[in-house]
Length: 109
Length: 124
Image (cartoon, rainbow over the protein chains, first blue to last red):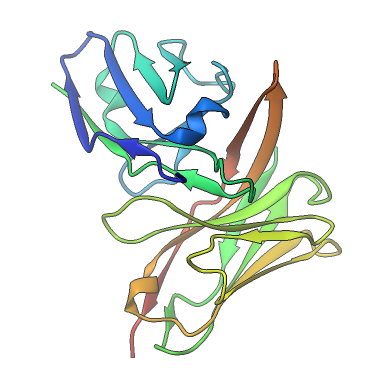
C-alpha cells in the first residue's frame, strides 16, 4: 500500500504530552518525516529520519517508529504548537514515489 | 541560506496549462532533488513530482499523464506544467527541496526547504 493514515484531529492540554501517529505499510521499511503547518503558512520540517530535528526546532518535538506506525511526540505542548501536522515517507511500491499522510489538526487546550 | 520562490499566473482557465517556476537563491540547484507539492483549499498535501538536477523525473501516478517538471540549471530554476486543468486543480502550489538519506539501512526522504506557496485558481 502507498497510503499513510493519520487521525484527523487530536487535542492536548497546555503543558501535557501528545503523540500524533502515522500508519502505513511503507513505514515498515522507511522512516517517516514530519511537518508542522500553521494557517496561511508553508509546512515546516520538524522531524526527519530516525529522530532528527532541524536547527531551530525545539527539543520537545521527537519522533519514533514501531512496525507500521510512526509517531511524533510533543512533550510539554505549547500554545504555539497548535497546527496541522503531516507525515511523509517514500512509497514502498519500488517506484520511488513520495506519499503524505492526510494530516492531523492539533488543538492545544 | 537557500530560499525557494514560486512564480506564475494565479488564474488559469479550465482546459489550459498551468505553468509555474521555482527560483532557487542562495545556493546551487545542481544538487539534491527538487519537487512540487500542492494543497487544495482546506485539504492536505499532495506530492506532484520531483526532478534531479540532471533532469531525471518521477511523478505522482495520479497526475503523471498531465505533468511535466523541467530544470534550468543556468537560471537556478525548475518548472511545473500541468495540462488540461479543471477546478479540482485549484490549490496552493509549493516548491520544495527533497533529500534522501540512509541511516543503518533505513532510508528516509524529507522536504527540508519550502517556498511560501502560490495560489492557483482554475476558473473561467
